[in-house]
Image 1 (tube, rainbow, N blue to C red):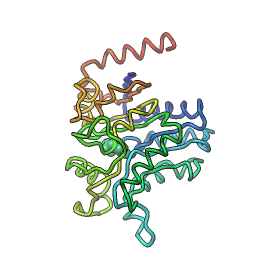
Image 2: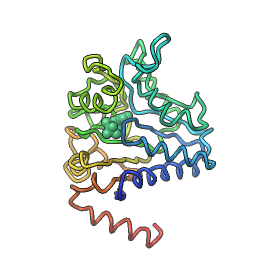
Image 3: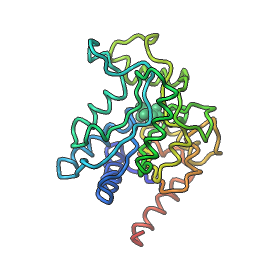
Image 4: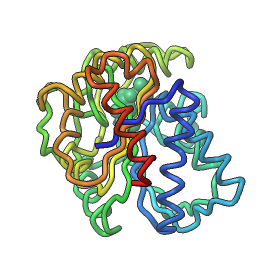
Length: 270
Ligand code: F6R
């Protein structure tokens, strides 16, 4: 596991975007797993910049981690009331790059048959050859996607109930600004499972800010537990890169060791 510590959010985002761009350059039809939330916003801005300098997304395929159940674009509904992750992804990244519509996969929050949809999503990921690089943030309670404390570490794409902490975090980050009542927020979501995420060939997790420091230390250096579903990162057998800013790294016991490893690898061109 490579744990990379950068000075601030901007540097963290640049580093993460370069990793994603590197995957696309090495494999132009690569399959990316994408995340929403406040953390990847600048990573996506950086990727758009790299695209403007020539990075080609025309063969890239994407699968998003999750979507609220009961939300999504709806004819006749004011656009501003659409708080779907689909809208977020289009505004923050997808509308600004040359990705093909048919190559974009985001769980359908308006599906009539969520169970069937979840099975279909898993199949589509398999059919694509599997996710080459999965981008992840981390929730305040350590979740990946909407895999809240207590979710099985082998779980697959499913409908899940959101915890109070996630509802509060999301309300403050997104819904408050849109003047949407707390009671009107969706309480369920479709999410890739932890098992689905661990099937990705490579994982790129990013985190910034003091409020992520405790959970990052628990996730990376604590025991593997279904109470912190992202601690499953310690079980992943492929390439893992974790990019943190100084604040998010501030509670890591072994931060100096990670800095040393990065420096040594650079020195020896590894
Ligand atoms: C989003 C997602 C979530 C977020 C997490 C962190 O698709 O799957 O797990 O990554 O809630 O959110 P932010 O980045 O807003 O702190």
